[in-house]
Amino acid sequence: MNEYEWKCEGLECYPEKNGLVNVVFKADWKVIGISETLNEESENITASLSGFQVLEEITDAENFKEFDQLTNEEVIGWVKSAMGESKIGRIKANIDKQLNILTEVKVKTIKLKLVVKTIVDDEIEQDV
Image 1 (cartoon, rainbow, N blue to C red):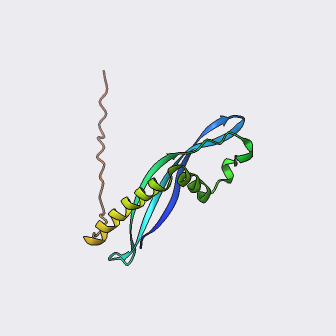
Image 2: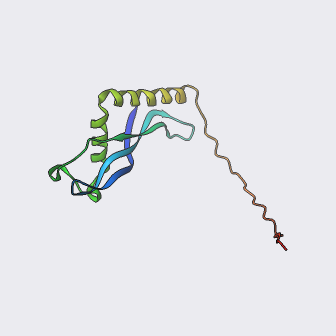
Image 3: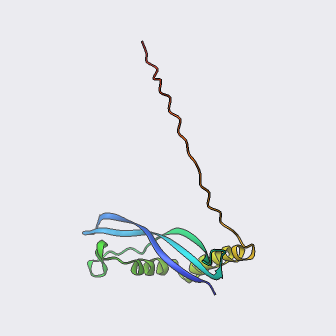
């Protein structure tokens, strides 16, 4: 059974709206699916999906929370609420499909060391 970790990657807000400051209206999210299957380095195989969600508008001070007091869990709760169960299910199904492919074909990640050389021309052309 795969596990899913939801992360808020960023927020967009109105600087001021209805007398409130930094009113969040959109959240960038990432869901990481974690398989029980281990790769060659004995790490869980993972796959992810990212996107954004426009959030329900908060128009009154009673339900408003200060920007610097927001937590990942709270924002992800808003994201999931705005998405609905159907979209959440499609996201998980997409990640499950990715994980199935990665576990079936035993994908190996090879990290390359690239050497980058920059050539600088010492001569400077001048207009006379």
